[in-house]
Image (cartoon, rainbow, N blue to C red; front, side, top):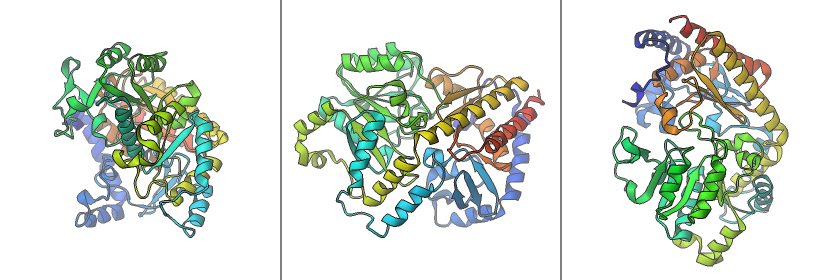
Length: 463
């Protein structure tokens, strides 16, 4: 079972961890009786009691049902309030319901939600995104998953090649091409415990390499059947994995050498700064995708591309027909409501000043967590990237997705997250990622560090 995976650096026995978890489970049930009862009623009309699967994947006996969320606080229906460092897994990266965004959507909802016609705000968005990321042309989708799917389809059409190359343990949304894994001997895993799409013809769709392995990247691109490489500049799905010095530059060079297009997915790494990791480090993608946070949590995403790509698209399909044969876009894509929310968020919320506060907050968290790890002599580490950081249950930072995943410890994750949740602090489920919004105070951050420290102290005391 996937949830049986555990790090070699756990430092507590299975029984000790089970006992700690049982205590926290009981405390959680006592604190959240209304959420528990609501979850039980929901079984009659919602699959597994939630409207979307991930909402039930927090490792708790039942999810919290939310009464309200504002800034960096969430209040559940039992009246418990939490300092939020999950922020909707990046969807609310700048805080819940930022006032400028709330004002914009309140105004726009009475002026028209969707017409399948553009508004003038879309021009402002195109200019702003171009200034931020250095790519001149933009299109709007509903989700980052959609944006990635559309761009992959465009790349296949422009190159005449069938395959997409991805990094092992990556995540780019629910796209079949990006879900395969590497198995034993470095071969594409056709059947694995992680394979939730056993019917997908993986060998026809995908090549997979380890992040930070330029030799493997060149070997697979040399087949000249890869339309595009899609990569996060920092992997964020399996425990954050930073790029080795020069790796992303080598990726660009190899794509050029073998006629492959490069897609950079900034959906999470936008937290690196106003222009994401791309602007901060001078990356040169052919396409860039971005979603989740750019409209304050309103569903919308964008994809940008170079002038050369725009010329090739228009030469291939013509300005009018590009959507028809390729199935790109949807009736609600680029709707006035989402565009208004995106403009307000980019113009008044996702500012350089906000990013400065967010990144400083991350440094305060990471410094505090590293000091606690040293104090309690725990063989773990902290990865830093922009406004987000991650506790790694291993002594050195992982270099590949496989290395990161090998030190995943689901039972330890579930226990530590529940410990924090019972003491009024939320971090991202599925792994130990923490994200700092601009309104987080030093006191909020110090509370997170203190609760992590209490948890570490208890774990260390059992050795």
